[in-house]
Length: 115
Length: 196
Image (cartoon, rainbow over all chains, first blue to last red; front, side, top):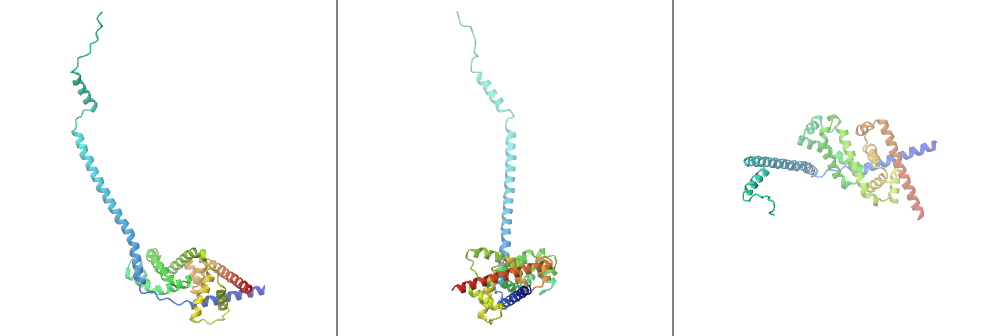
């Protein structure tokens, strides 16, 4: 048991030394001169994407509004034209024409054949 | 704290120059932490950019200026973790084991048997990095923050939002896993060595 504990402590110590050596082997890095410009550029690009979509959405909304206004106008105008048409229905007009056409014909007489 | 609370409040309210000052005050420290955590100098700036970008977009969620540093470290730990996870996915198919030389070197470092001159430092970094690649990203980031960055259990508790006792357990287990990986690599290296 003691030997096992000793081994564990020894392993732990070796790992600590390894980490310390690694820390010393890794130098502190100086950020490059374009670190901040690059960062702001990325921020602006990412902010630009929703802005483009926003503009697109606004344009689509404006176009839809214009189209619905035009359609509304068209319906109103065509509605007033409909009002100017004769009030009779198509069947009534047809029946009337049919009556006057019938005047050209002699009524059919049903007579019994002469013997 | 490297800056006063007033500067943090101004940055949180969207003041651009205040945000600039905040980044300027912390970037060196944060880049150092990232460098030690991910072990790839060439990718440090990219991860650093990601940290400060996340900071910019999450500053309005900061409860109070007093918890700014743990908040920033949390963002740093998360960005490092994300990077390591992506890297593991990328490297998985060609993940190399610790080379025999790296094992011998790590062994020698642990036994304090080598000089740490500039030439050796790069090899030390690579050997420890390869060793830490054998444990999970969570273990790696936690161990780096505690053992290399030297953060206290209290500070880690604020970063991870867990109690100190739970952290102690996690740290113990993480250390055990690194040791296990180290010993396995040593056995493997000695088997290869004796086979020659």
